[in-house]
Image 1 (cartoon, rainbow, N blue to C red):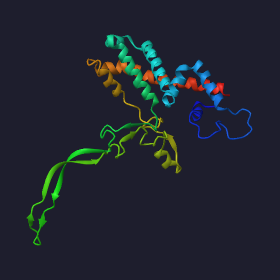
Image 2 (tube, one colour; image 1 turned 60 degrees about the vertical axis):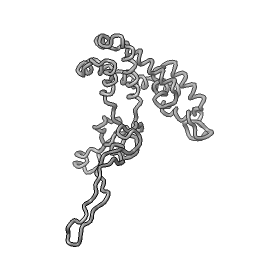
Image 3 (spheres, rainbow, N blue to C red; image 1 turned 135 degrees about the vertical axis):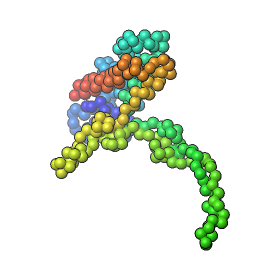
Image 4 (cartoon, helix red, strand yellow; image 1 turned 180 degrees about the vertical axis):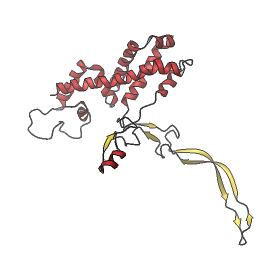
Length: 260
């Protein structure tokens, strides 16, 4: 049984909770079996299962636990130059990096954030020339009364979010599927050819730029230049994101072995 399939047992839609259709199968799993399997997985892959349950919104406690373990891992892998630059603020810097790395790991094609242009309102206030009176042009084509135009603040539809107030993380090229049509191959063969989306790397969503983490760190360390960030800090940030993916994979393998 896949780890993702266990999520249905946390929000059942009916009285029967199994991962197989109704039948007489002897190896069907009940909700109790799945909960026991998750407990056994926690004993063998605590970090991975906590990261997964926190990512899916099942448990806020597991999310905090995963971030805490990620902070400890960041301490172990932080280069000496990072500790030298951070100094007494090392603990806070590792907390910021680990929290942002976990948020990056938790992103998916269905995730969304509040629009930074309209702050969730769907409209923005802009200055525009508003025609109060269109004026009057006589039959001879001459302007008898000039138009009245005043400069005012008006509300317009927010373009980045198209008035929705939120911006979805899914890739605009592949619509969150991670797959796109190879136009050159399709034109050559005459049949649709599917390839991994080059824009999102097949993930289905755009990654959070590392500049967000850079700005958060420079709020504590104003003297940190971008060159030092990219050489010493950014590899650590990417390593933390990768660590979450690896640990989730370990937990998924353990869960599948237990539920066989």
